[in-house]
Image (cartoon, rainbow, N blue to C red):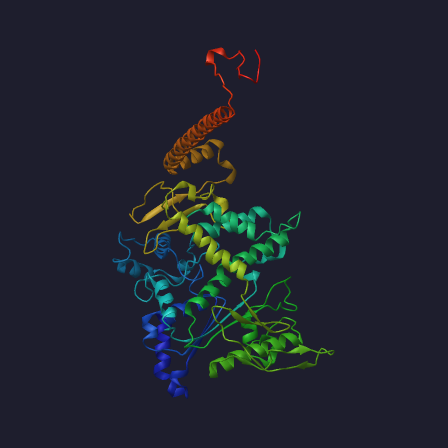
Length: 535
């Protein structure tokens, strides 16, 4: 709402600064891109026409971290740590809580520790039912399908920037497979509710280099970082592009694939903001930097600035530096003007910005399919049995190893959005909205009997009796069918033998020979045929 108020202020006052209220452009990066996505689909902004064009970089409202999943739970944490009263109905009677919080000194507020996983955020937009409706995803899809996308869009992202996902120590030293499992568990249990074990296996299989006999810490770091990057940025951006595409608006997608030349960190991609704001140009640009940029980095920065400027002015990212190439001398760079192609949901063309700029299509399509097709498909199948079935859970989904940075105790509060974790209720606090989950201190403390109990409970929950009944019915049907077939074959066999015997008798009669047939009790006697055989 603060951002909406600022945009209204711009509309009312931009003329005083020589601006055009009909040509306003807004850009957002990462969480700012998620906020901007929410803004231009909310009726409070689209109806007012607050801006004409938008640039979203490395983020969207579809990213898992774009909104706070449990805002009332974090409010309860803050109130408890600051000794403020918590009403039973936090959504209707929050005035006393606000007055108490406003009386607390700043240094006490800064000491508050919000319990959240490594993947989720505790501060950000939430589904309030006013500016962001609970059905905002359906509303956004309908907007794109009906060609009502309210603004021109330029979407951009980079290859995996590990510093945006992992800590500096994790980037420098890498980590082993156990720590990777903890990271993926933290992501899975906070995003999905059904078939968690199957989802974990699918992600691990997709982002493991099976061609290597030994998985080095750096290799595990790179594949894990790429997987989380695909899940948090690439796949949501690809889905957003397909949902909001319309021929009535300018719509472009670009990808930065160029690695920083000498950023001081191995294989770390530079944030595209450094290029957009002229970081490689040093004192000549608005941002000074201590990195040792090359001439090509300067060219990339000019390319970004050109793309942005032309999109802001004309609605199409015309780039005179898009085919810049280094010649024999490091200081000689030639340019060839090129217009970036428009995005379309069929060919999914995008403009790749790097050492050799080019037009490509279907960016990381296989990985996007995993996150946008396979895993949601597993979720839909899991909804048949409900969220409380034990076979949906990971075997150790409530253990402290799940969240590497956590203390092992979590408090979840029911609000507009229910927690993605199906909790084990161990006790109630003084408010009916709060569930306390106590985690096991050590992942190795789970006994074999506990695992057997879980497997037994899984057997009880799963509808095996129905499957058994169907199997028995099918088996009985096949048995009856086999009996009928055998009876029919036997009947035809007897009939054929009688026909052969009758045919032989007729043949002998025609030749004038008399054939005597003995009874069945005379099996060892010779059958006489007059004129043919003698006794």
